[in-house]
Image (spheres, rainbow, N blue to C red):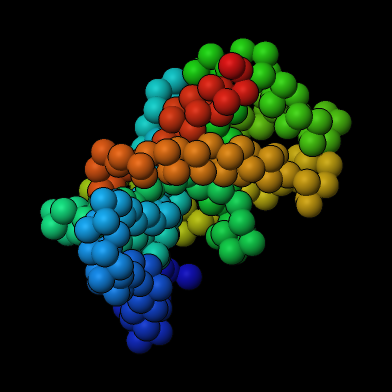
Length: 253
C-alpha cells in the first residue's frame, strides 16, 4: 500500500495526530508541567535535564564510509522532527532538553516494520573498523553460529551491501526529504531482502539482529546517561561509529 495514500486519508491524519501526541506533545507537557519542580531544584543549586529517545535515520557503514540512511516509510518521522523542535525551543530558553537519535533496532513493536532490522548488520563491520580487535572478532563468531550450515556472515553482509548499493535505496538516502513516502520498488526490495536473510538463520526466533540490538542498547544507555550530565546540543545522533566506540571502550579496556 502507498504510504502517501494512507497519510492523505482521514485515518492517516488521525494516525499522525496520535504520533504527535505521544511523542513531541508529551515531551512539551513534561517540560511545561515540571516548571515549578525545575525552579525549586535550580534554586537549591541543582540542575535539571530532559531526555528523549529519537529517531531520524542513522549513519552506518556503506561502501567503506559512514553514510546516513533510514527506514522508509517511517510515518512517525514527522512527530520525531517535532520532538527535536521541542528540545531546540527548550534549549533556546535555557532548559537542557536533548533528543538522542538512536540506531534502528529490533523490538516487539518494530517487528511490524519488516526491513527496519537491515540497518543493524553494518554494525558488525563498524566494530572492526573502530579497532575492536579480538572482541569484535568474537562478536562475529557469535553471529556466525546463528546461521544455517552453508550460510556465512560474509555472504549475509554481501546481501546487505547489494541492498544498500542498489539504485532504489540510493534514492531514499535523502536527508532533506525525510521521512519520504514509500514505493512499490522499495517495498519489494526491502521485504524480499529481509525474508532472504531471515531464511539464512537456524532459528527464526534467534536472529543476528536480536544479538546486535542488544549491543546497540548496551551502547546507547551509557552514551545517553553520561552525555545528559552536560549535553552538547538539543539534538544528538548516536551513529554506528559512536556506538561501536562506546562498546569497544567498555569491552576492550
